[in-house]
Image (cartoon, rainbow, N blue to C red; front, side, top):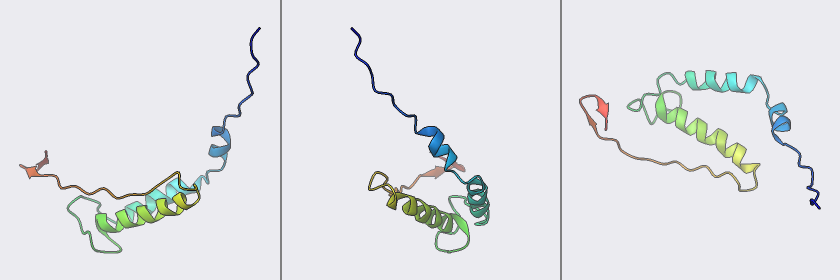
Length: 89
C-alpha cells in the first residue's frame, strides 16, 4: 500500500510575486551610474569606478542578508590576476 506524501507548496511563485518589477531596472541604472567598472578603474572613490560599485553592491546584499536569519553571508574575495599582453591569465 503506497504511503501518502504530504503536499508541498512550491515557494517560487510567491517569491517571484514579491519582486518589485522596478527594482532590477533601478539596480542596473545605479551600477551604470558608477561609470566604468573596469577592474583597473578607481577603487577609492565613493561615486565612480569599481570600488564604489563594489561597496554599493556589498551594502545592498548586506541589507538582504540581515533578513535571512544568517542563511546568506556577504563576503568579499580579493585576488590579483597577472596581466600579460593585455589579457588576464
